[in-house]
Every structure is written in C-alpha cells, then in structure tokens.
Length: 91
Image 1: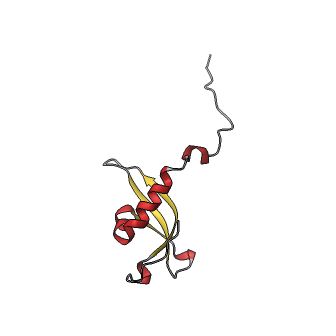
Image 2: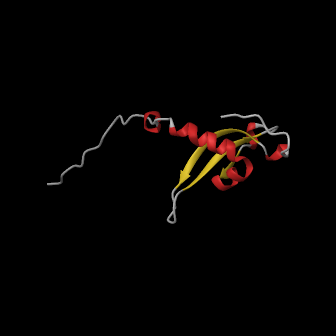
Image 3: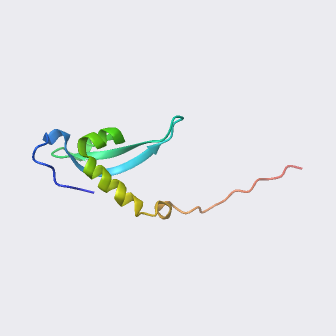
C-alpha cells in the first residue's frame, strides 16, 4: 500500500510503503509491527516499526493499511496441509 508523502514532513520520516506486518504474542497482550519502506531510501533500509510508532508517523496510512487487511482471507494465503501424522499406539 503506497501513498504520496505530505510536503510538510521530513523526508527521512515518511513511510512510502508497507511491505509486511506481524503480530507478536506476549503475556500482557498482542502487539503489531510493520515492515516499512521509507521515502527516498533503498529497500535495504526497510525497518520494522511498532504500531505506536506507525500511528505517530502516519496515522492515515496505518488506518488505510489496517482496512485493507480486513478484506483479506488470511487463511486462504497459508499453504495447505499436505500430510498429517497419526499417533501410534504402543503395545
């Protein structure tokens, strides 16, 4: 999901695109982080940022990205289970 940067922001702090995201499970609750590409930087400079950092940098892009995820069937994008294992009973 790309968007054009706003002219008032520092270019080094502008998110150009979201490449990936992941949910990190922890005891107090889950947290989400996103792999972002920065305006004017190569893909090798992509970094993971927390949802809090994302919201501070570009809350509109975060909201649009989250909305785009709700329409996806994430289960369909997982590879199929091709083999199952049965428990063996020992004599």
